[in-house]
Image (tube, rainbow, N blue to C red; front, side, top):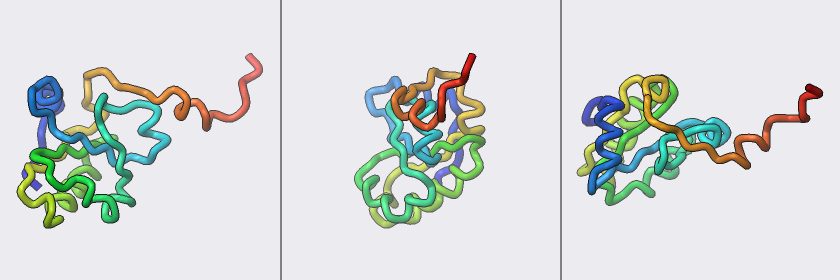
Amino acid sequence: MDGEISTAEVEALLDSDTPPRIVDIRQPVSFSRGHIPGSENIPFNELPSKVASLEGADRIVTVCPHGQASVQAARLIKSYEGTGDARVESMAGGLDAWEGDLEADVEEATADEGPDAPF
């Protein structure tokens, strides 16, 4: 892992010519309710079997709710031979610290809500 990166730095990088790959490690239901635009969802428990999909990336930023589990995810990604040359960082503070817009997958976000409330 190459350290932590601030949310402001992530936002600036997303607007650059060479945006990083943002890997959100939350479960799909949480991801669908709101995530950084352009991010991809690879749940932490699936990361060991899907880390190969990140091969060839120049820069990877891991994201979680509070910025703690994403540190472990960044270490795992960096230890993989195919991503060893990439810059791999964890977003400090996680989504709690994110001040930018979030994108939601409306159909998936509401699919698990249960029956309609009577009022």
